[in-house]
Image 1: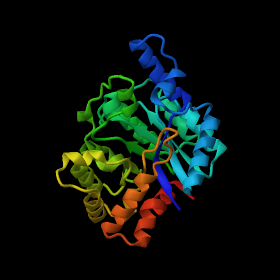
Image 2: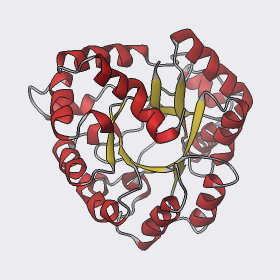
Image 3: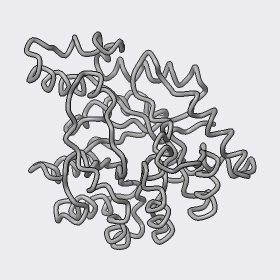
Image 4: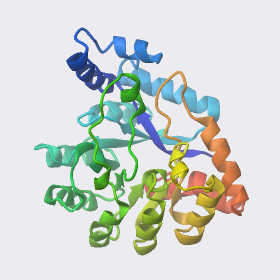
Length: 299
């Protein structure tokens, strides 16, 4: 079985947000024009996009995926997908904890909407992880069983914004994995997921995960951040992560997002080969690509 812990649900609301930003720069842009400009499929209603995802998963024999609503305030879209296909999706959502309704949204998302992971992007929304508002979100998450927090650290680049000529006013100084250490130790039973091996802060991600047994690394994307480490290969990354973090805290992910590209099978293939070369046996590979996800989010 394949369980993918990192897929984006690019709903109509996601394109609405892009269209508003595009219209500020180019008056006359509309939500319907954005997918056309990008050469992507229009998402349709959330239920339609959920069905499109299931068809794609079936084609590639993917059992379950974590679907991330990829703009703040879009919890309902991914909740529709989960309700429609509860055996195939686990619902995650992007949150800006600096917004006035962030705590209310979090309570609703984790209770009535049944979502399972809060996704934080400190560099994108420009806040520190020791902010009292962020601590409150972690407190709420810790009060709900079966819930995790995802924190994007390191290099952050949104390709779709570049294609549309939109600026991204991020502050990557706020994305240091070491800043997770204090809050991770306050909530030792709350799983905290660092995507992309720390996205350029590999050493810092390893240090944080080594010191905090509740910190997991997700393996998603092409991991192009390796260009900042001369000579580093994906095999080296997996070998060092297995040595320091251990097989039980690595979560396979692809960072798949839009159609018609669909599910990123080449990412799965390259990571399978890299894990093999890093010395993992069949049981350890099953943990990374299947079992760890199931342990965190159920069968």
